Length: 378
Image (cartoon, rainbow, N blue to C red):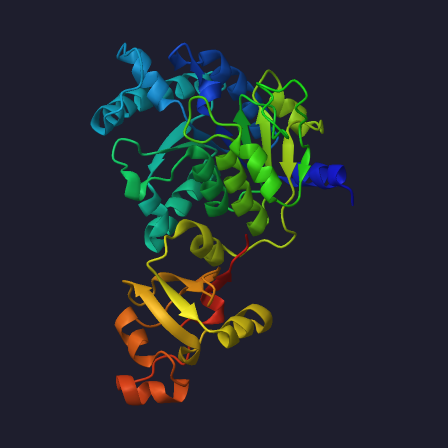
């Protein structure tokens, strides 16, 4: 099947769609671009009428707050930026509510930090909330909770957030709308001979170089952030489109036109638990393993036993996520540990039959079971 047919099939069968709207789309003269919100609303409501489920990940709170408070520019101080975001978030939601209310559609606001998705219980709570809203035909509008976020709990950018929401909700497609028509081989704003790349099956170093030269003018993302989002989704089996926001862009995408850049995913979807482990959880430590253990895990799909462990770092307890590191310091994957760090330090290098004599009990033969392990996808 050729790339165009793949794209057509994915879009045709996409029922649950995440649409990320960037800062450059929603910002106009230091304020919100109300026209953009309204034209997107019209097209989204048309998709809803076709029994599609839509989740919006929206930037724009900072721009709305700056305009409402009559600031001339975005302040650098974190407390002021958080306060502006708090003011702007209310304005942003009011504009979305007004736009969708015209079509008798209801919206809901979800503000998240990365902690909400890294904690398993909160992750499931967020997923259940989104599932419930969709079942009620309510449109979730998601943003980072900028009013409380600090560096340690930030998603980094809304491109990453939109990818995580797509993974959380098992979406069929992510569409990122920006002010550039797609991924180009060079910056189209400065190079007249720039050519759009319509299909991407593998994200290579050369693609990353191209993306790194195309920064975001207003947001924190830029094209590199979009490629990082695509990497997550492609490895998990979810397609993604980067397209330029303009009149009828969603209509054109869903009518079969080759708009933007289409990222072709792996054919097999990663299960929900492994998606959470791979992309939402921040590892609490590292376990370095020997070559024999690496081969057993990577080639034969085996669990990690204590005999293959060389070195441990970090501070983790039972059930935490850790990275598996090779002898040459490559990240091989991540997994949920069956033992806390102190006990692994005691049993590392031992056979599983020796665990009980050292610890007084042997609840598990494996330090990390293969069912609780995700190998590096990128």
